[in-house]
Length: 282
Ligand SMILES: [Zn+2]
Image 1: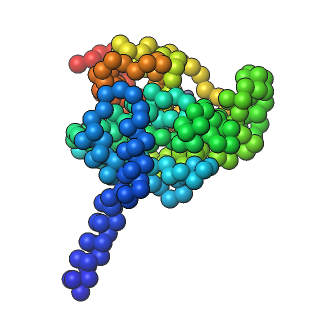
Image 2: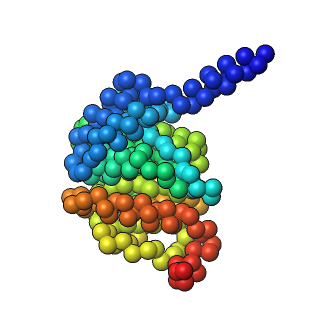
Image 3: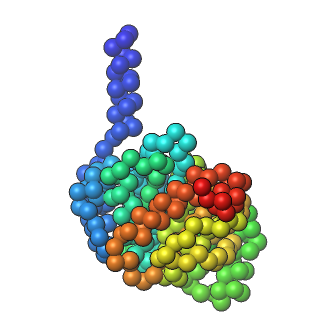
C-alpha cells in the first residue's frame, strides 16, 4: 500500500516538474535568441528547459504559446503575469520578456512570476501587429461592451485602421483565448503588458503616485473596448501595467531590473493603503 502511495506521489511530482519537451526548448531558445540586447545564454537555456504550454495555447498557425514560471519565496508573495509581443511587430518587447525570464531563473524572487514572452508568434513571424487572421489581440478581449462598441469604436475612433481591427467576435482568436486561459489559470494580482514605441509607463489600477522611473515617464494612455486594460482593471480590478518601450532598448538591462523592483513594490502594497504608503515612505 505504502509503495503505491509513494508511486502516486512520485508520478504526481514528476508531472508538475516535467521538463520542457525538446521541441519546445528549441522553440524557446532559438526564438528568444533572435531578439537584440544583453542576454545570458546560460540563464536563457535554463529557463527554456522549464517552459510549459497550457492546454490549447497555440496560435492560428498552430504554434505553441509557451510560458515560464518561477514561484516566489516571500510568504506574502503576489502573482505577476507578464505578456510580451501581444503585438507581433514590437520586437523590443521580446527582449524584455527574455531578460525577465533570464533574471527570474537566476534569483529567488519575492513574488511568483509567470512570463509569456511571445503571445503572438504568428504576428512575430509575419512582422505584423495583428495575428495571422489580421486581428489586433489587444482589441479582441471579451470586455462587456465588446458587442456594442468594439467595431463601432474601431470605425469611428481609429478610422478603420487595419492595425487595430478587433475581429468579428469577442475572444474569437486563439491568442486571446490563450491569454484568458492564463488569467483564469494563474489568477494574477497584477498583469504587465509590454509594447513599443510610445515611451511611457501606463498604469491601469488604483490612482496612486507611482515611484519614479528614469527610463520612461508615467502617462495614462486610456483603454478601449476589447483591450486588456479594460478587461482586467475596469472589469476585474486586477491592475495592468502597460510598458511602452522606446524603439531602441536601454543600453544596459539595469532599467529593466529597476522596473521589476517597481512592479514588486506596486504589487506588494495593499492598494487601499498605497496612497499613504507612497506619500509617507518609511
Ligand atoms: Zn503594442
